[in-house]
Image (cartoon, rainbow, N blue to C red; front, side, top):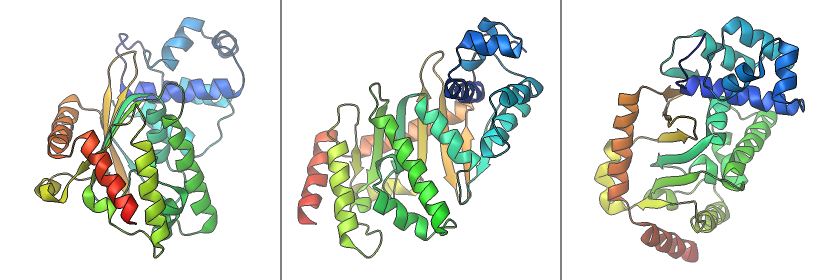
Length: 284
């Protein structure tokens, strides 16, 4: 199933997961290809998202890597089976296919842009803040809650690796005042965390001030993830109730990018945003 060397977000998602599975077994590309009965070049193309893989072959390759039945396997086979285009994932009180898709794309990202009007973005949340959010959701069970917190913390490692993506979060000023849980110490610690991360060279955190609240009417939470080469692919992730919509249609993504830039133009600049966060942190 040649793809004309034109990668798609779906192929990149599948390839990234297969590369991770191969690394888990300490196999070289050559060894994995030999055991699977394919060429090294083919295996490399699949892992880089430059070669589509048939669902039947993917199923056999997942067997080779001992990927058991569960969200990851279901996620990959779903992407290989359905036609290219946007895809929808339900968000459940566990590590769902939506969470796995998101984490995989973040790991492969060159740039992550996000807007949050009411809560701190997931990549910046402290554990106590996460637990309070999860406690009012469908994952109240302690085992699920711990699993979700640990998974989100593992996602945050993308910002501290040696080659982190450029991270551009925009948050509404109200986020800095909204108290999550009844303990003010949680809000205080969370704001201090924002102040720390905002000083990192690869982070460009912006605050949309209350004086620009008119922009909130069309600025629903959304995420834009631009993947590293090969190719320059961007996927938009839109949260709607209990599901995440992964948008890879170029025209739709372009519209979402225009919305993000409009929000960014209305937000405080990096220096002013950090000053405001520091002021609120000092008053907490």
